Length: 184
Image (cartoon, rainbow, N blue to C red):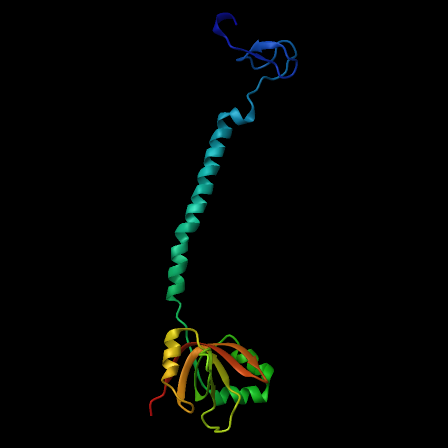
């Protein structure tokens, strides 16, 4: 180590050379720093880290925007009488399923069944005293259950919700959003 120069070993031939030498005087091999010790590589890694952190932070900051868009989405209910649904089902069950499946509806019908466990009610057409197949409406919460407790068979109801199933044997299934009695 003369004159304060640092010495290193040539990666190619193993000879001792000055650390500042670009080329080995013995074999002519290039004396480069490893790629991970080069300035441009370190800058590149730092930039990539900022990009990754920024994109993670960007996803989190965009989440509230997507939530506010969901909150602004209002459900639009299409009004029908249960008679309309049953006539469509009797005419062509496949077509009725295509028309009503997963649709948000506001149905007017006559209360026909109140489940003793409070899981569902059934409404049928108001113009048919002997109808047994209609729309089975599933109660979703205690507020709806309390409202049904004040109702009686043959009351005319307005039920809002989403039709979840359509079948030619069992009729329609609906998840209730709101249920109320029509006052005469």
